[in-house]
Length: 219
Image 1: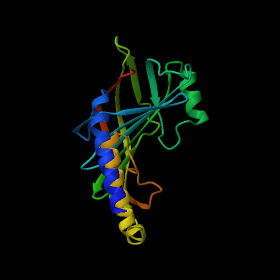
Image 2: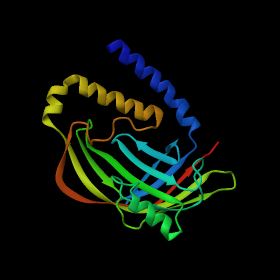
Image 3: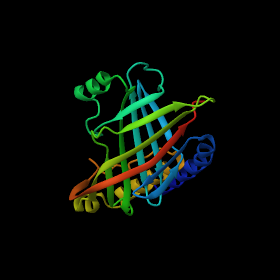
């Protein structure tokens, strides 16, 4: 087990240097007044774009989903309506976006930050139906550039005592492996507390995103 884990670490660290060189995407946003900069990754599934912007120490993940209506093969220029991250693709949201005639599609945002290591506690923020928007433009070189702001509903999560005790060393190892994967690949791995042995706390607040921008290279 130890030998396999050591080999895995070596391979991932080697991959990390290559992956970061190849990633020319950028993201910058003020989160509760503090600057957050990182190199996001993107995935396209059908007409849904998933942008994941991650960092470590502490682990942070800002995810933005963008879904268009008119062109399933590309993300079009225009304005996207930000909706509830838990229930984004509802009939009501689609009808609102299509009916007003000024949106290219829907968007959702979710922010996760580790507040106690190693991934013992989290602060999570989710977008709501607040008539907020993300504006996407295409640059001369074909890259996509976007601007956004948003107020996320914040919640706090703590690892369940049973998950800590019964998970033991194996759970801790999984956390460390996930941290390494996140650092090496640029994609978040196991960073979300929901459904992973954590309990939502009673405390709630807001997470405010301002002056948000990201740029995605298409080639």
